[in-house]
Length: 108
Image (cartoon, rainbow, N blue to C red; front, top):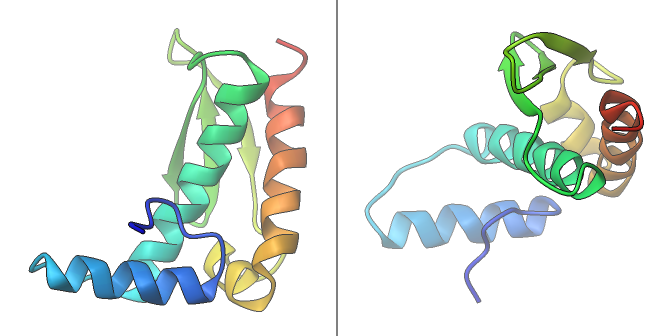
């Protein structure tokens, strides 16, 4: 099984090993931050029935821009960073990202 988007720390470590086997040395931090972004983007896409808004990192926050490039939402971590949130409780972080995606989509 190839892990695309890790959902917890065990899967982060498995993803890191898989990438290492393919010659890529990637830190847990990089994998976690990409997972948080991917999870949030996937929720946005599901809620909006397509890819209309795009999430990206801006410092420690996730920012959402619409198809016109207008920033429509900012999502901040509950703690010091999304990485720390994920490491502390990946399930709770995922649930929070889903709720934030619902708000960011704004009924679109």
